[in-house]
Image (cartoon, rainbow, N blue to C red; front, side, top):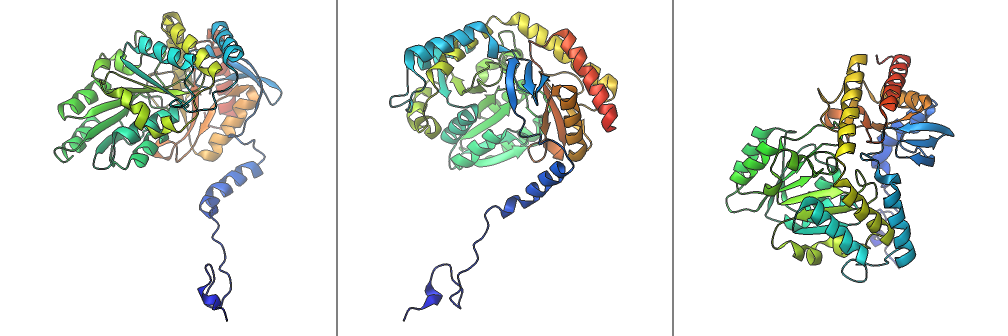
Length: 417
């Protein structure tokens, strides 16, 4: 006779145990979302763009809408040369690669894209990933492993944190943009241990800039390698658009620069550039590179063309800065609380009192014909709810004034100003 008590998943009486619902951990978030939707609001995280008209406008809910939340900083998504390069590559090479870069997934376009990156940054090595997330995941987890130490800003992007976790290094966070705190943690690392300092040029939530010059100096004085994520500064910060590290004159002291194609470049994908003499071995040891299908031919062709055009984008950069300063000052004058005291990047974060009123403000702006990002905890620092605006070089001066009018009307309607 069988002893049911020994059956896996059964209790002592032989009754099968109730299965644990692995989704139960998400119940508070599910309830929060249901409460917002029950009030008749549109879901801020499932907006559909029915047709994209330009880098700055789309049809949303059947209405012509100004886009102020797309990270399309340099407006390259509709550049005629970028689009034509993609069309030609699809005709010549097909729709996809169906393989990893180390197998059949390296086409001529991938080499040309990496050549364009090397030229843009004036560096020896460039490695293209299928997403910006994978670039951080792959590079960080591969170069810093068990027994090594990663010292990073507490407000680092999720892809940076996930790269740390995947590599099993000791992770030592420090208070956001706090130079003294970073130095203290560096000095506590055991002598002889490998050290990697991970920073961002522009932090994506508040749009604030890191004090890279001082931080890189301290990192080097303490024997650490430095990785800087320039995802939100590539293309428009620095004389040649190489980011904050170029702007403050320390780009040659940075060991690795990570970036993405889904912001200023206007396509999709990620990359790492470096002057380290052993960097090419990464192509054989970096798992998120080795075990992922490579980018489609059309994407790398469009990307290479966009990067080469960004080298000569000084006029666009100047106009984007003008837009950013105008919008930042205008919102402050209206009485909104912003994430930074002055315009530091193309990201302007408008701080909301709480999630409910943030969602109401988001919907009021959408009704006006303006799309921005609603950002909420835990993705935001200090449990803030933000309306995150990302300007584009293709926004006209008139559009910026229109946007200010929309914010004024929506803010008064919701009771925030």
